[in-house]
Amino acid sequence: MAINIPAGVEDGMQMSVSGKGNAAPRGGINGDLIVAIEEVEHPELKRDGMNLYYDAYVNFADAVLGAQIEVPLVDGKAKVKIEEGTQSGKILRLRGKGLPEVNGYQKGDLLVCVNVYTPTKLSKDERAVIEKMRSSENFKPSGNIR
Image (cartoon, rainbow, N blue to C red):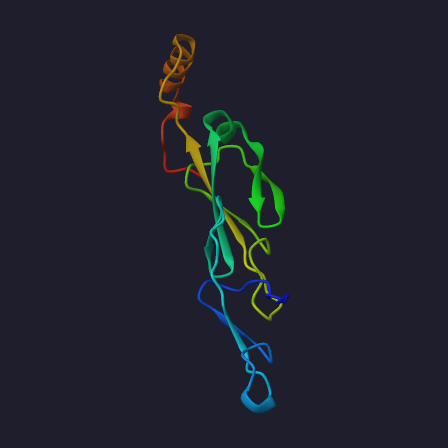
């Protein structure tokens, strides 16, 4: 027996399927089948109601210069532009890319948290470049962080 599960159902919800339960005694009408929804977690997306959250990791150069990254959706992928000078912790909102409301018309958003990856090991040349940048006024934190 196939059951249509509406998009957007959450863990713990129940739905009733009329006439598909136990047979009634003495030829009466069959009972209803109660289906308990158990949600399987997505490997990369976290759910909060209709909204989805994704942690995107970008390297230092992409955060400074800007880049385009691909993020997962429930039903595919989306390209997201990382603006030049993006700070770690910035939240990007993709409207309508979350989950649909059960029996409704609204859709949640996908919230992408940008995390700047900091390398733990550097080559001699990389270290020299970073040391040179460290002394530049442009690389000192200020109150003008976007």
